[in-house]
Length: 106
Length: 378
Ligand SMILES: [Zn+2]
Image (cartoon, rainbow over all chains, first blue to last red; front, side):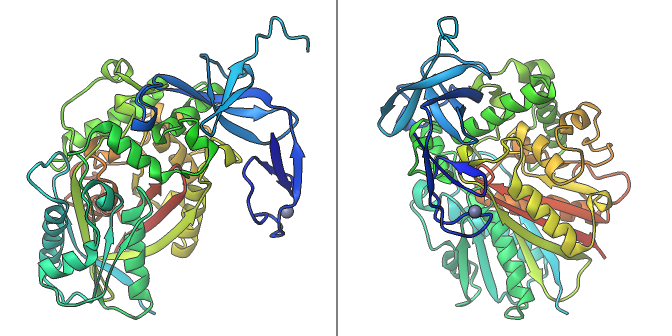
């Protein structure tokens, strides 16, 4: 996915100006669709729009090769530090899945 | 130089009031504040409200308050900043007097929420997050943000769910002595820890409730015994994924620093505090951001009882949002109501030594807004 950067501040949000130097943000880089769980919650009391999904896990994912993080729905239960990768994009939501680290060849 | 003083305060009971409309609540609190101020000629009205349009199908609250109180065709405005709506309205009232435009101003905040279902209220509270992002589509809720913060905070500090529970317990114990509070039933650490989960690790008692209620203050450039020493505001990130440090609330830190600077005071000078404890986790983060305790050590202060009524810096002697209740637009003004009573010496949970300097911090969104006011007994 795309990450926008200026003055070392990286974000998946495309802002107009850099809050540090004030210049227009022009640097775009492509980073892998994977990362580790920085933190998470399991939402038991959902808003009406997501009632059919509850309970569901939402995590803040630290993206690989970047300082940027992304908020994503996760298909399984996770812990902080778990490796996750993009599964699909559903109705505008990034949905990640846990990477089975036993089979990973890092 | 012009200064601003508090002349009157008013507050409804917080709770569930089926037979009272949003307007009824606004009028009830305003009327009490005007009486307390001995009915000065009001020059303008600022209203704090978040969901009048969606939940009560009612806007033009400022003009309605002026009309129904019979205050004449004076200028009014409604201010919105999610849960900081009340604090922002108060700040606009302060600034309007400092500008020299008005002498006496009525500030009133209210919310009417209990008639709607929890799913509907949760949906509308989510409007306090950026709705046009992948983060919202992922299903992050407002409480979910603070649940995610809490899991990381516990991971980094070693704090346990029990420390979150201690915040909730302290505030409930304070609310028991506040007849205007929504929740006055005693509870225990066990009951809090074992309560129904809302968004892991936050359970029912870690989350502020849905509440009906209103609060009002009358401000003036004429001296009284309570002076507004500082009014400051900041904004912060509107998305969790854009937080540079998930365990900080920059809006709280910046608004606090600006208020201290304006007042020429520091955290050590503050005698009593009302902090925006929308969640137990939020109170811990904000006592750190306001400089009362070191970063990532707020939970230890809670453990040691330092924020209790008899502690070194009493926080939320009213019962806080968690137990006094959280009628969104009223909250920032209800904090002032409690602090003015502390400074006057007749508050629920009155401090043994009558305080001289008080601080109120009101948060909006997931840290998108913060307003800090410092009051002084003169
Ligand atoms: Zn820059």
